[in-house]
Length: 366
Picture 1 (cartoon, rainbow, N blue to C red):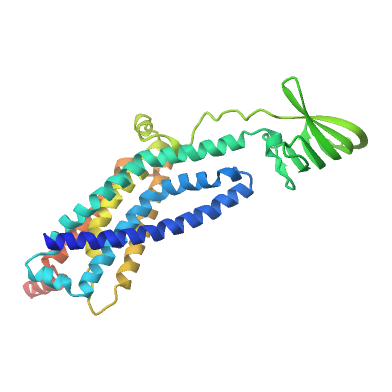
Picture 2: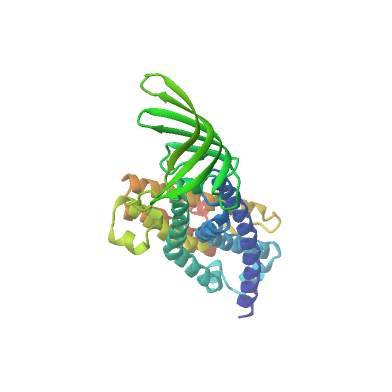
């Protein structure tokens, strides 16, 4: 049908433009946050783009859903404004007949949203977590950055130095603060170099001062040295046994139905179901007076999207804490939203009105 073809072309243009804008905004915000994490030492500065890419990939399901929702609302609102819907209604077609062309356009997007939510989301989170863990397990010497205070792997030592050579084997203006065995030690030196003795790495300091302060109140001792050796950790932190829930595959969540796993599973499945509900909701919220601008429809659509996804996140928190069950929440939120959308669409399709019903009831009572 010619009308179906034209509306799908317009939806494609609107969807593509909205997707580009939203992805650009999310990438900018993600880049700022990732750079902040890199400045704090949580992310390797050389892997900022990789972390940002995996993060944006994980955000794609809600981005695609919002883009599809805005595209449908914007296209149908324009058709109301340009009186094209009058022709559609004059041909004996109702609002429910729009479901077919809209679903023919939306089904690939819905399929991609489901694939991203159930498969790509945990994979992207796992890749991001691996990058952060690998950077967090680096040795103490690898943590040192010129002109910056850096914490050691175990959190008990703070380094500061100006690296002097490209291979990072020597430096100057060295400062080391250590808390170990109820003693706080502050060591400063004019220069130092790294030497490997056996399987251990040592930082050999030259021309410095060492101050030891007992945390038990036993006093303070200050000494000066010409040569001093300090062992540094070149190993890695212990592996974390418990992986974050968001990095587990969907199959693992199904096989291990704990509270946290069910909450994560409800969120992933909810993304796919919400995308379908938004297609039906978009038809209902697009109906407007042609003499009124379409900005009101878009504002209401954005408000509905924000409320829906906030309820989705709230339900995830409730399921993880045991305040709500998986089935009850899923049926109440998504089933209730689908029921409201279908009833609203039926009301607009059949021109149901509450005033005539109330008038008949009053007449019967009279």
